[in-house]
Image (cartoon, rainbow, N blue to C red; front, side, top):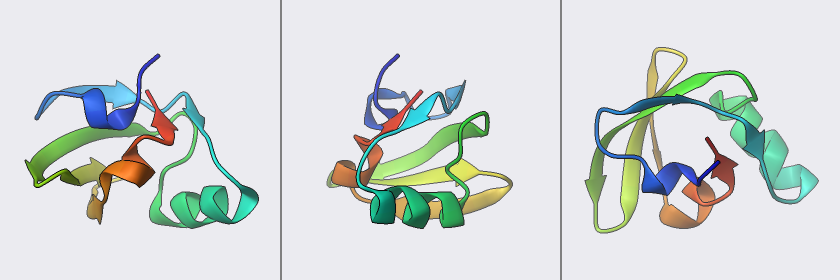
Amino acid sequence: MMPLCMLNIGEKKQIIKVNGKDDTKRFLANLGFVEGSEVSVVSENNGNLIVSVKDTRVAIDRAMANRIMV
């Protein structure tokens, strides 16, 4: 298990766990980051990530990516 920000570009993994407070978990769940979903990193720019989750591309910062365990 490792944080999402450690994935290489193009590598696909399944979300195992989402850490954080309830508000953070709810916010990420609304974006599609739920346990069991497949996620991949599309690109990285200055620590910010563009990830593909549930056929949608989402931009998140490194702090949020560290809360998503794959």
